Length: 379
Image (cartoon, rainbow, N blue to C red; front, top):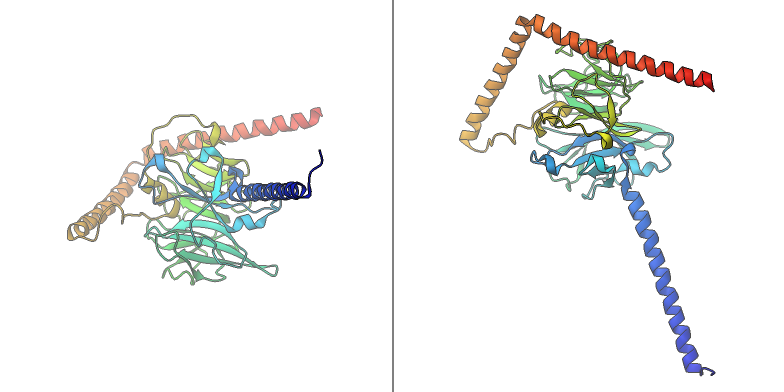
């Protein structure tokens, strides 16, 4: 049976509509695929790592912020311009932060190299700006604690690539992009830096351990270093107690074990000791007691306490408690120093145990190298 002209026209219209709808669905599919891929990355893409101070110390509701790692194998450098976040490090899945105004500067390629917070829980970031094959480091800070607020550029071309506060003086410290040494900012204006202080092995980042000693990540080897004593200004980096795990950044977990970012993904220490080995966090099933709070973790990371959350200084009673808190903290520091001086034998035993752990680690590394040499010779 032949179709009349009207029916043929209707069929043709139906065909065009169906094709059009299919094309729209296909474009939507491609968009979703591209959007999904651009907004999700894995643990081995993360360089800087920090825990959000807005978690209210609820370990079941963690949020981590991270920045994208840049190396010679990265094809899409634009990923490094964004902040990423996750609520589970074991998920191996990070999404682009959906807060507004998260680009450090619009219409510029500025790579995020360091993420931190100040005492008032305002996000601070160091950005590496590329312009006509030249690069420079700038410091940015959110206007308020609201992450949707705009960025304010605090310093331009300051040659400081990562930040941390001195846990004793609260002065701002920075690692120089020129020599990897520690510099100090007395006025906290982010522009005038004094140093280098105690010239030693160049570092890429510094923080503090749970015992308040300075920890560093080596600039050239990415190993984990510790200062020989509590006074980092006069003590050198310990040349024997070195954890030879390569990391980009470090952050404590609640159980006192270090979390590290690496080219193998997020890794975690098996035990809460500096000498401990690291394994993939997805394989870390060892149950340890939680010994750190959110404030402890952030204090070790950024060097200062967020004590504005501990005590409400808006009231007279809160101000009084704050004074009492400061007196108590000073007393504890003095007692700790006195105890350290009086109990040299005790501390010597602790140091010897720690040194023994490093020796075991060093022997294990030598065995691994011997096995690698044997494997190469057998080929």
